[in-house]
Length: 138
Image (tube, rainbow, N blue to C red; front, side):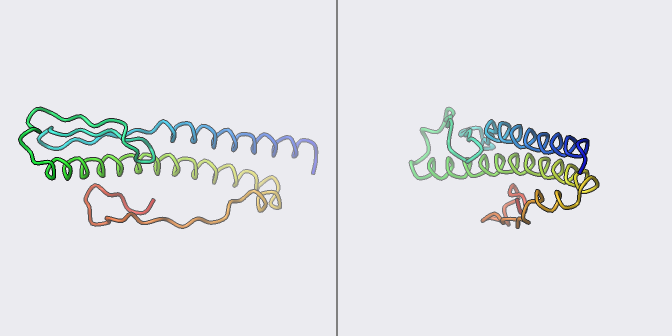
């Protein structure tokens, strides 16, 4: 390899590392909300699905504790699916960018590309695939 090739590969690998760091920051900032159609319950979650906020609207006092609990649970699940979809979108963008970088690296030095190429990953399927809000594999 020449010094120019080494410099080009080093620059591309630094760009890949930068893309990964940027994606990490964006994923950590992901939040999603869901609200019941009657606006009695609104839930906000982070990227991992942890509850950040639950807002109960006027009228929830007429619900039983079980009804309210079920409503909060279903709303939180919808918000969590939305957050997971946003994370999946970030990961898809990162994967696309990494593939482009690997193609460039491969054109410069195929042996280096084989070293930095990630192992294949397999999609995970959500637990409620019949749910209309649930995306397919992520």
